[in-house]
Each structure stands twice: as C-alpha cells, then as structure tokens.
Amino acid sequence: MNEEFRSGFACFVGRPNVGKSTLMNALVGTKVAITSSKPQTTRRTIRGIVHRPDAQLVIVDTPGLHRPRTLLGERLDSLVLSTLNEVDVIVFCVPANEPIGKGDRFIANKLSSVGRTPVIAAVTKCDLADRERIAEQLLAVSKLSEFAEIVPVSAQTGERLDVLADLLVARLPHGVPLYPGGELTDEPEQVLVAELIREAALEGVRDELPHSIAVVVEEMIPREGRDDLLDVYANMYVERPSQKAIVIGRKGERLKEVGTRARKQIEALLGTHVYLDLRLKVAKDWQRDPKQLRRLGFYD
Ligand SMILES: Nc1nc2c(ncn2[C@@H]2O[C@H](COP(=O)(O)OP(=O)(O)OP(=O)(O)O)[C@@H](O)[C@H]2O)c(=O)[nH]1
Image 1 (cartoon, rainbow, N blue to C red):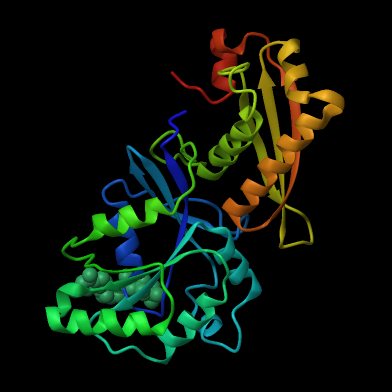
Image 2 (tube, rainbow, N blue to C red):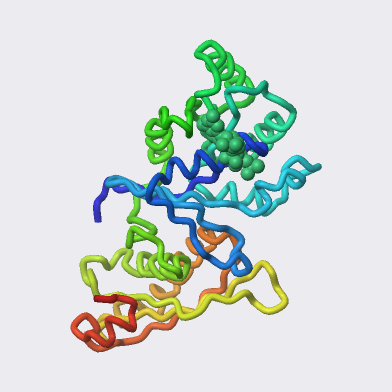
C-alpha cells in the first residue's frame, strides 16, 4: 500500500443555485462518474469521484441536503447532520456575485454545530465578480463562521479548482482507493462495498495474505418494513483452509472485528444502517482458476 495515498468523502452544501453541482462536476472533470445506483436502496448517492495519483476523493450527495425546504426549515434533519458528521470534509458554497443572505447564514450556523468535520468555504462563480468584489466576499464569508479554509473558485473558468482539490485531499485520511477500478461499473456500490470488506479483512494480515482474499457482495436489499436498514450479503473467499483460520482468528474474534469494521465503513459510505451477513469460504486456488476468477468479479 502506498502510505501517502489518501481517500475519503466530501459533501457539498449551500443554498440553491450557488453552483454546487457545477463545481462538483468540474472537480470530477472528464472522468465524470455519476452512478446508476438505485436510490431506493441507499440514502446516499455517489456524485462523482476525483481520481488523482495521490488520492481518491469521493463526492457524495445527501438526499434532503439539496431540498431547500428541509434545509431552511425549522431544523436540519438529523440524518443530514449525521451524514455531514460521517464525511471527511464539507464544502460550503457561497457565490461571489450575490450578497450573503439569510439562507447562507442559516446553513453556516448549522454547519458550525456539525462537530469535528472540517468545513472549507468555496466562494463560487468568481468569473462573475471583479477582484474587489471577490475580496469583499471573502471577508464577509470569513465573518460568517469559523472555516478551515476559504477559497475563491470558478467552475466556469476552472480557476483555482486545483487549489480547492488540494485542500480537500489534505483533509482526507490515509488509505487505499475506495474505488479501485477507476471508472464506475453498473454496480458501483456493490463493488465498493466488497472492497471495503476486503480492506477490513486485510488489516493486520496484509503480509500473510497479500492477494488471497476476494470478496463478492451477493445482494444488498433494504430490510422489509424498514427504510433505515440495509441487509448486505457478502462472501469472502480465501484460497486455503489455513488462510481461513488466519481470517477467523482466535475464537472467531478477528472475523468479528472485520465484520464490525467493514459495517461501519459501509454505513459511512451509504448513509444507512447496515446488517452485514459475511460468510467466509475457501475457494481452492481461486487465483489460478479462470472460472472462479470470473465468478469473483475478475474479468479478462
Ligand atoms: N458564470 C458562472 N456560472 C456558474 C458557475 N457555477 C455555476 N454557474 C451557474 O449557476 C447556476 C446554478 O448552478 P448549479 O450548479 O446548478 O447550482 P446548485 O447550487 O447545484 O443548485 P441547486 O441544485 O439548485 O442546489 C447554473 O446556471 C450554472 O450554470 C461559475 O463558476 N460561473
């Protein structure tokens, strides 16, 4: 693993029309990776992924966050708040060309109660304002709340998007790419979830089982009658019984830890409670068996 690599999640907030979508898309750039994920199964959609040699930034959408009525209502939905708590960094967007209003103030206040997640303020649409106006806006934003950084950008011209990306990446934890393959497939969530489980299983035993663990998520379905719980059924494969023993650990404790760790990560990714049904199986020498490789999702 590259020790310097960072990966994690960002969420963009701001009142309607401030340029959030345009900014997210511009950051994701040509590798736009809007998922075809099924909204009924998850609370959170992946908006796009910023791929860099040193980092992978997953931009997530939070349902409800973009609905002005929810956001500007009496209170922020607790789900939205908990989601904001789970991401690694929040981007608060304010346009350069409009005075700061009640809506901006409301959101800034809410964000200051979010807790530990750092908030970076982006002054958007800077191509629509002159230098003096931008300077005034930066000052006004700095008085709104305590932000980790404030950066003027233009999604239109691309100005300082690299600076914003660097600032966001700097707030991500060290880790492997959350989405290893680059582009998203038609089942991005399943693949991503499998990768999170694999990572959790490898932790601590990477040297012993470097490439011997494969994970396939068979099914992700919402629990009947509950809209806040997702059942995830996954199989984890090792190549030999001796490896199975390593993964299980003493009295099954390792496997239990792996399940807990993976579940937390999946919950953070999907924004919903998760019940993880994880089965450990031996697929004899799967790395050398083309049929098994295909079954495990490795295509030629
Ligand atoms: N000139 C200029 N226009 C921009 C820029 N970014 C966004 N816009 C325009 O501003 C309008 C709103 O942009 P969106 O990205 O849809 O804003 P949003 O915050 O996602 O809006 P909601 O989805 O309503 O929350 C669109 O007409 C964009 O074309 C920019 O950097 N420069």
